Image (tube, rainbow, N blue to C red):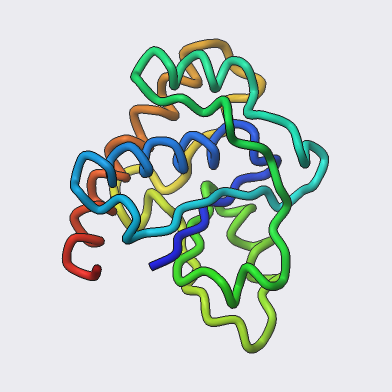
Amino acid sequence: MRILFVCLGNICRSPTAEGVLRHRLQQAGLEGQVEVASAGTGGWHAGEPPDKRTQRAALRRGYDLSQQRAQQVRAQDFERYDLILAMDNSNLRDLKALQPAKGKAELDLFLRRYKGVKHEVPDPYYDGEQGFEEVLDLIEAACDGLVIELKGRV
């Protein structure tokens, strides 16, 4: 099983989801059975680490994102990954526009699929520290739902 998280620049929301899910998979004994990555619909930050505020907020909860580097979604990702989860509706629209006709990946909004309450992970980039904490709260809850699904699939 291969999962790709996608946001706009791949420096806040999607690297957070990647780090949280990796940690949750390890806790659930599923490490090595699920490939997890993240990317952005835009390539402005390609090669950069996650935003410092993202890293600080994640580290306070035990997630080390320092080794991650931003990358842009590529056409081959739609063939490589089984599930591509967008952080917001704009990202989902962009992914649908990029998806090749023969792409096998299933596309969905991350929170709609796994939390069902709030349909988008808000972009904390222009917010204060509380925005990054809210993103973590939402992503942790959704990752818990995703891990439950993965236990039944892998």
